[in-house]
Image 1 (spheres, helix red, strand yellow):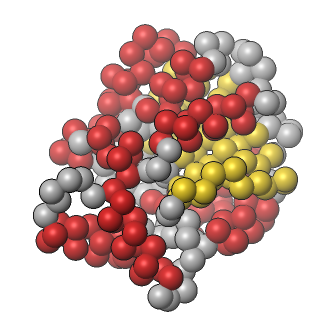
Image 2 (image 1 turned 90 degrees about the vertical axis):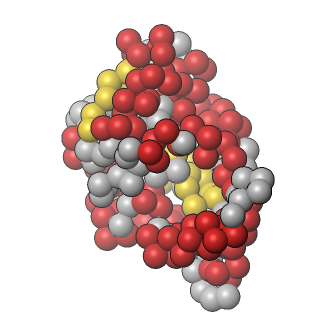
Image 3 (image 1 turned 60 degrees about the vertical axis):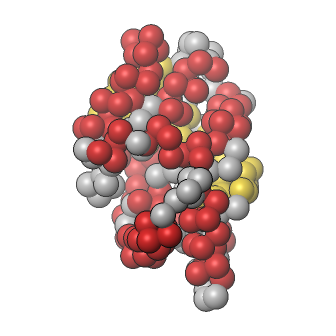
Length: 224
């Protein structure tokens, strides 16, 4: 993953953003935990890529008291926030600053990557998926969810506008929304859903299944 944009002041407001911007945010965590639990033992070891902030780690740890976790994120500031959010669950969590290459070799019983892949340059995504798969036990589940919508115009612009409008706080400054729209166009590398599924298969995952579709976001479960 590239250097995280989540540093300094951006970290302070992070905990407010995803619950407002992502439809069904808490339900996404619950579904992800349920899907992983279908094939993960009570003492399972779980890899979480893009774990900065700690919201999914906290949700997963609360749902499954016997699981242990290794969380990977390129931002030291976001990992520090994750430690704070995790609270008493911290004894079951390991934190690793960097991209997927710094993750322990495993093997892991499951993996998750939520709201992260649209920050990873497209040319790095296949290798990232391959490295996740290599660290998983055979048939282990991988849950991934992030922004994904058609990339042909005018659909692409329409979905960007919808995403910005949905996540806008009450009374948001129009100029600020325009800046956010511009940043999204220029900085995020988003794929259409069919391309996401093809890349998961190219990385060696099987039984790729859509489980979550909410406005500009999609989520899949697949197996190593």
